[in-house]
Amino acid sequence: MNEFDFIRQLRERLRSQKGSARLIQGAGDDTAVISQTADRDLLITTDLLVENIDFLREATPALLLGHKALAVSLSDIAAMGGRPLWSLVSIGLPESAWSSDYQTDFYTGYLALADLFGVTLTGGDVSESSQVVIDSIVVGEARPDRAVLRSTARPGDHVFVTGNLGGAAAGLRLIELGARVRSPSVSAGVAEPLAAATGSTTNDDDGAINSLLLRQLAPQPRVGWGIVLGEEELATSMIDISDGLSSDLHRLCVESNVGATIDAASLPLNENVKQLCGRRALDPVALALHGGEDFELLFTVAPENVPRLPKRVDGTPISRIGEISDQSGVTEVREHHRTWRLQPQGFSHFTRPKT
Image 1 (tube, helix red, strand yellow):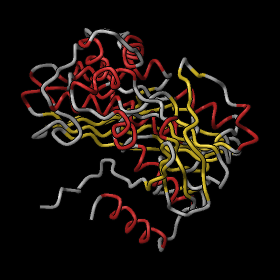
Image 2: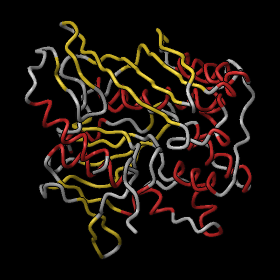
Image 3: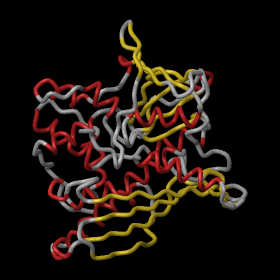
């Protein structure tokens, strides 16, 4: 049993519970959706980051961990088409980290990103622990019936992604090979230079490596795109790419009871991955399909609404990568003159290689 098998079992148990009439969407999407007022629904998400599972402390400056802890939760709100407003964060630290002012750098990175998106930190908890553990909660809002679910894609819809793919997975591979990021200095304005760095393409190898490391360590949540797609009612369904395109597309299709065909030539590959792949045994297409933590938005749009899509939001473009089919749960990749089944191969907790 992996984490998603367990979640499916838990959802079955929750169906027998007597639920609140105000709960619109519970477990199984990027956030919970709760009816708040006549003109607003509440969105709530939580994410856990655990040392040696989700990050390596020696490779992740506390400044960037603070940024990422908030970014992953902001991405969930964006994936629902919502606007983030408030957050809570709890942190468990070993004595060695506390003594080195790790917590100060962590909150500097966290608050810089919060300020960038107008999110107010409203509380949390601090505890001593044997390793670094972060619990991030973000609360946002959406207009009634405007929250974009995973379960509402329709056959004939076009499939889009924001930004580019494969960079975060390449960054993780580089970390595993011993590469370390040139972290910006601790300052109140750290989020802006990070936003520029993680979207940059550079001609020199050192710069390309650092950019890929930042794609992994300091992802940029597509909050602006989420708001546009939700409030303008452009997306029929949406999910953020946290575990990998192959896994997250499969998850969206299963929830919507549809299938999808992806055009390999249309995948927006990260340019730095293409620059470095040949010399480091990295396959850009495989990283784009199966690599996680790009935190781009994967969304579907009805054909008649495609002309209404902006070219860019906050400087980030989108790419049409395929279409939704009526083959329930079947995801495929079209490459030149052949089509092959796309199996979900992204990250999953509690999954170990068989020996």
